[in-house]
Image 1 (spheres, each protein chain N blue to C red):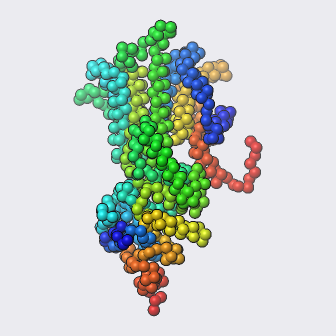
Image 2: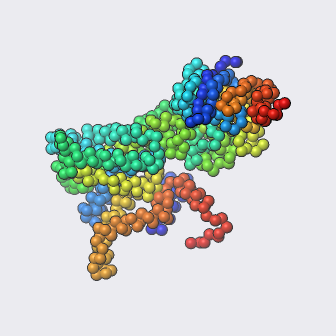
Image 3: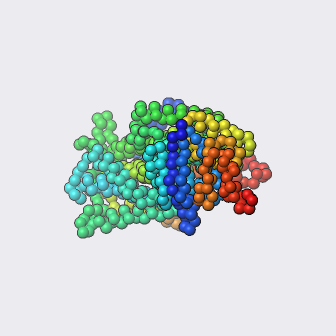
Length: 257
Length: 378
C-alpha cells in the first residue's frame, strides 16, 4: 500500500530575488490524499506549477512512479499521468462543458490530422468513444444536465466540478487540485468532499492545496506545510496540527508560548 | 441589408432546425452547376471572371480562418502562402525554366511547400500572441514579397518585378482549360471550365475545414484560442498544434495560389501585397470568425462588392449629377471602406457568426447596457 507514487527531491525555484521554493522534498504514496498547505505566498502554487511542467525548477528533480518527470513539458507530464486544476478556474469559457472534457481527453487519443480529414472508421469510433466517456465523466461529477451549456454559463461550483472532470479525462494517476473549495459555500464544499472521496476510492491519488482547514484535516491522509518556500513539516493531520512550527507559521512566533 | 441580416439570423437561430432537407442541397448543387452559364449570359464574362476569383478567395479565407478563427492566431501575412503556391506553379509550368509539370504534380507539391513555409513562419512566433504575432507575420508576408521582387539577380529565379508570364494554363491530360472544350452537345468556354475546377477545389477545402473543426485537432485549436495555459494542462502539445494550424492554413493558400497562377497565366509580386492579406483577413472577420458558412459568405461578398461599386459608381453619378464628380475608382474604395465600418459597428461578430459567437457578443452588450432602460420595439 505504501509504495511511493511521487517523489520531489530538493525542488528550488526563485523569481528574481524571491526564493519561492527552497529545497522542497516530499513523497506522496499511492492512493493517498495528500494536502499541501501554508500561508499565502508560501509557494504552494509554484510547487504545483513546477510539478506540472508550467515552470522549470531551478534545481531538483521529480520522480513519478519510476520515471523522472521532464521539466517544462506540461503535455508530457499529463501523458505520464498527472492532471491538475487551477486556483483561478481556467476553463475554455466559450466551449460547451462536453467539449471541455473532450479536450481533456486529447493526450489519450490517437487520431491525427490525416485521419481527422479522412474520417476513417477508427477515427469515428474514437470520437464516439470520447464523447461517451466525456458524458460519463460529467455524470460522475454531477453536472451531466449542463453538458451542452457553455462553460462560462455554469455556476461557480459547477465550473469547479467541470474542471475536475476535464482533469479526470486525461486518465491521471495523480490529480492535483489547487484550492478546489475556494469561494464555495458549506453545501458545495460538502459535495466537493464527497467527490474527492469518490475519486480516491477509484484509485486515483490526490494532491490537494486548500485553505479550508476542516476539509484538509478531514480528507487528507498526510499533510505537508510550506512556509516562505520551505517545507516545515510533513506528517499525518493530527501531528501537523500540533507542530510548533506550523502554529508559528500561521499565528506568529508569540502564539505558542 | 436588414432583411438579409434577419434572414441569416433566422437560418442560424435554431441549431436544432438546421437539418436542411436534401432537396435544398440538390437545388443548391444545381444552382452551383448552372451558375457560370447564367452569369456569363446575364452579366458577361467580366463577372464570370469575378466569380472565379471569388472562389479563389473562398479558399484563401477558409485557410486563414483555420489560423485566425479556429486557433486564434492573428496572421497578417497570410497572402505569402498564396504567393508561394502561385510562384511554385509559375516556376514549374512555364518557359522560365522550361519546365511543364502537370496539375496533379504541382498542386499537391504547392500545397506541401506552402505548408512548409507555414511551419517556417510559425516556428519563430510560437511564444507570441495578439499584436506581437500580427507584426511578425506582417513582416513575414513582406519578406516573401520582397524576395520575389528581388530574386532576379544574381541568378534569375523569379524574374523580379516583371513577374513570370506565359505560364501554362491548367491542363488535365491533353485537355487545356485555356481553350473551349467541345463536349459534342455543348462548347464549354474556358472561364466556365475554370469555374468548375475552382468549385471542386473550393468544395474539397470546405469539406476539409468542416471535418477539421469537429475533430481532435479542431478542439485543440479552439482550446489554445480560449486559454493556452489550460490547453497545456490538458496534455496538448501547444507548439505542435499551433504549427499544424499554420501549416494547414498555408496549405489551402498554396492550392489557391497554384490555381491562380494557372488561371491568370501571369504572376508578379504586385499581386501579393499587404493589402491582399488585409483583404482576406477582412473576409474572415466580416463574415464571422471561426464560422465556416460566415467566412464563405464574407469571401464572396468582399470579392463581389468592390466590383459592384466599380460598375455602378460612374453611371449613378452620371444620372444624379449629370457628370462624373468623383473618380469611380476612388469612390468605390470609399464606399467599400464605409460598408466595412458600418458592418463592424452594427454587427461586431460578423455578418453571419456562429450561433455561439453571437451569444458571446450579445452577452458583452447586455452586460454593458443599463438594465432598467425599457427596450424600444425598434
